[in-house]
Length: 272
Image 1 (tube, rainbow, N blue to C red):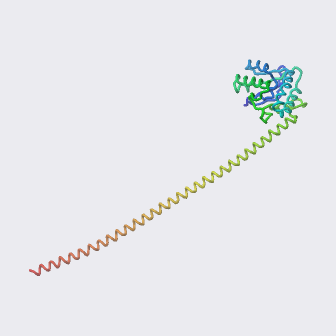
Image 2 (image 1 turned 45 degrees about the horizontal axis):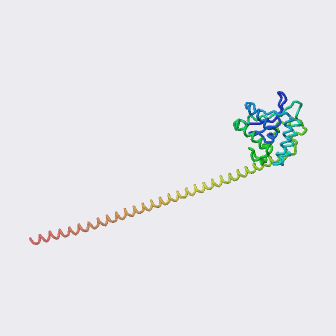
Image 3 (image 1 turned 90 degrees about the vertical axis):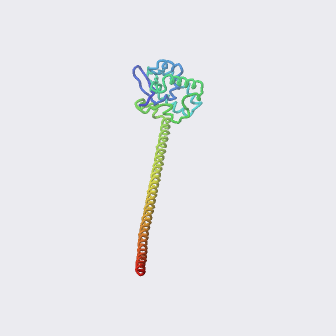
């Protein structure tokens, strides 16, 4: 679950939330208080709740408007509509409350307190470069004002922020950005799918090449084996022929020797 900050109207035990934000303290809110407003809750960390009299909130909002006018004038319309939205829902005895404890715990309470005090000083001295947030961010609803959608529909129709032209313009910007993100994601998915298919095809080609190489190698091995077998058969046949010829030659020699022996016997007999 996200760490959230809230801005609300408080009257006794009743609290009517005006808007909320996740993970940050929107910078419009930080224009509504001064250093003295921050010191008490910082000392009481366990209940980081800033409560402002409506008159003080309105005074600070008007005073610090000049900071936006000098640095980010394009935000003034939404800022003015947001201030009117708060004032339109004020009842007798209300105070404007800020609950930022969950967000403060994210950085650590000491670090969060230093950031808020540093931001407040930068606003008072008109030194935007010393802020810990960027004024150039384009998502003003998420970063500057917070999200009123869940709560504003139950509040007064007069000056309701949901009907603000500036708010609707910001919603359209967010939608266009989301549409672009969706389109970019779809294009990225398409490219990834193409890359996956191409990689799969390349792997298949490599696999086919490997199979073909293996088949060629096997064919070469078989051909070599067949040649070797044929050579072996040829050598065996030649050996048999040689053996037959040798045998035939030996027979002739034996026959000649026999003739010589017989002639020698007759010769010896004749001499006697």
